[in-house]
Image (cartoon, rainbow, N blue to C red; front, side):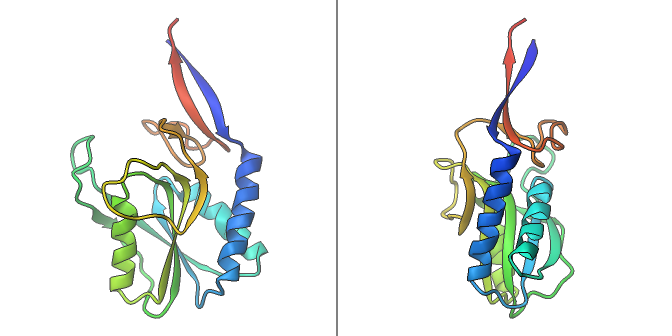
Length: 178
């Protein structure tokens, strides 16, 4: 078997979209902006987005949260838990919660609700990819980079068995018979 990579969203398209997302966030006039990246998959997107936010005239603080719904197995348990929490106070602040892909919605809804329970003034959700039709909970992202077809995607921080995170684009891996 050989693997073939199809580019779904190029590095250039992602960079342009990040600038557009940053402009939308800046227009919302956030107060004491805190960007919270949901690890691991969103780290590249979050890094590029915060640089775009700087270019749009904002000075966000940055935090990271690690969430899991998998436990010991490879199938989601449906229950989300905090593996690594943020350290910053969120009460009275505007947050942008950044995730790589919105699929079932469990993780993003859990993180949004957690930040609101902690007293965040406003929580905007921002995802690189929206994979519609897969929701297990009712949530839509406030900001979406791109719509995603029903394929397993990698690159730009997203992995398959710890591979492909370093790619500067989002792609689809397929296997061809040899």
